[in-house]
Image 1: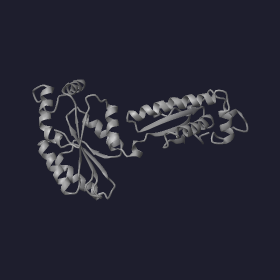
Image 2: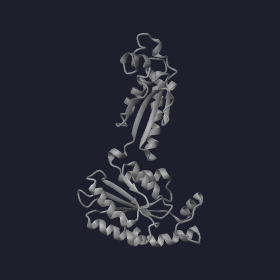
Image 3: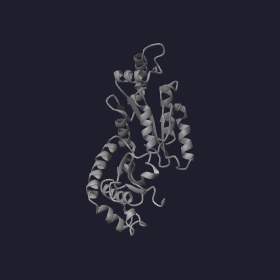
Image 4: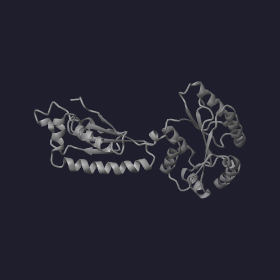
Length: 291
């Protein structure tokens, strides 16, 4: 996507109103791109120059350019020419959808099409298609979102622009104590309070779930292994679904009363099992040391 080694990658997101430009832009933001929405096309070269001056601090740029920028098609073609003269080859993503789908999307949000003026939404869509026909013909990637939901579009963008490391789902397993409250950002929660509490075993009470003695005690209780197996299988199914839907981060919470013994031991074991398929999994112990 770049024409010279020191030039930032630049993606221009454009296309029909209602086709998903904002969702495409948010997908790149999630991949740590710097994204400018509704940028006038003639500012694209300026944005590229500023990124270069940042000495690599902003290596990847994206701009959403649409018909709100007047003289749209001429401005974009001129801006692309200026970028190429600077050694930058912008990558143009064009989003579109069937007329019926676009009309339905505008109706669902009860807002007019930016080009319909005094006519119907369909009149605005038709005018926009004609205005963008030349740019569509020169686009590097055309995405038809007629049959795509938000998650599927985000997944398509991730497949196109994410590095292998960025595309991998980041999984965190966190232990916690219920008496300190649930982690508010947890996607799935396991409750280990059904297991006997090592707190009531004098030689184990001062230790934590990171000690082998506590781990063996917790995992040796009736039902502990079965619970760990079943919950890990459920998490693996969910993670596969999250991956397919374009999610980038998932938090699995494992709780006990104080977050010191049972949840710590179980979280460590769960992270170890998940790491076979999700090597970037991290384990954290939120409430360890609070007692």
